[in-house]
Image (cartoon, rainbow, N blue to C red; front, side, top):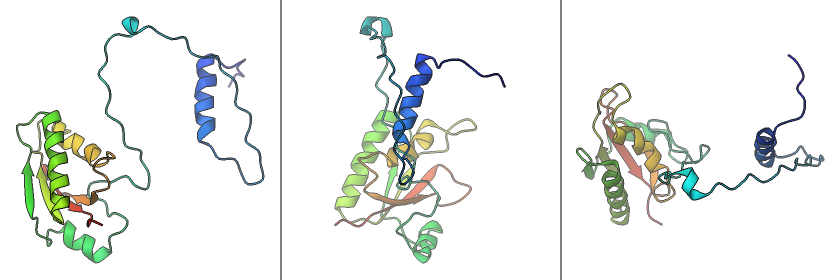
Length: 175
């Protein structure tokens, strides 16, 4: 592999972003960050219109993965929940809704259920068309991990392996 010369401005910027996330070893000082010139400002007219992106959940310890056993729930309770032995008290059917309306309905539904001390609910997104499923089915795990909903949700799983269009959600107990 040939050795390269100086780093480009983009590479310096990428390195600075990466270096900010790294913690130095014990007893070692953090390396100095390369100074990258500020990026030229692009006028809004040249950028064009882009819709604001929904905040992406941060993957890590607090990330909820549908079907995976969560921390804070013992194995017996998880198995009862996963196998459907804990009855759902409420159901929300999102069929036929746009993604935006489905998100708002889900948010209102989960907040109301949590306020009413409901422990287990079911959300029906439908299987959707195509190999990857529908929009609602793909977006539901992301919605459950948003800061407005993540504190309410303890666990999520599909009630049956053959039915990925439905998700059972265990809510946390209100404090």
